[in-house]
Length: 179
Image (cartoon, rainbow, N blue to C red; front, side):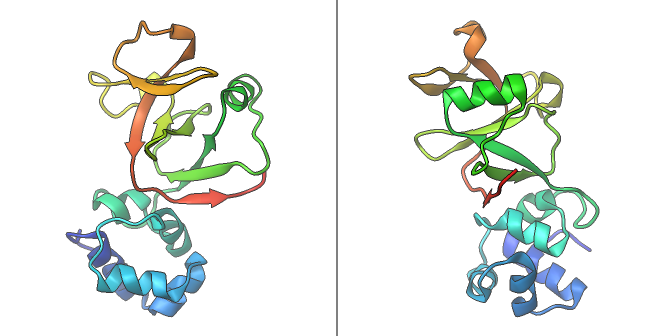
């Protein structure tokens, strides 16, 4: 299957390849049919539901969103979105996650302690292990303490509270789940 120019065109190609209707796609993805229809008719290039669509149709999230890689064969991983300094401490030390934690979909493996954090501007920051970052020469850190969270370029800023940023997202898909 060739790589199409937009998310919308890639979704159209997958529906054709799978021989399924918009209605069937919506059912598989747990979305309203109107959501699939809007993506297809408005020639959209991003959507917050991309993770659910990729999972529901069994296709690559990276291919659907960015047009890279192959449409079939990659596994989606769910990274917890941690919402407090205290919850982050529990996750990093005890792998403890609250039952109502939201998750973000990713095909990249950022390690067993990977987590996501939502900044005040709505950007999702995914943090993980140093070996897992895409561009190790150009990386930033997420500084989190009990009062604030911000992106820092300086690795000397309060080292204890720095977390290596692996990925930033402005458009994302959340899934509420219990452990």
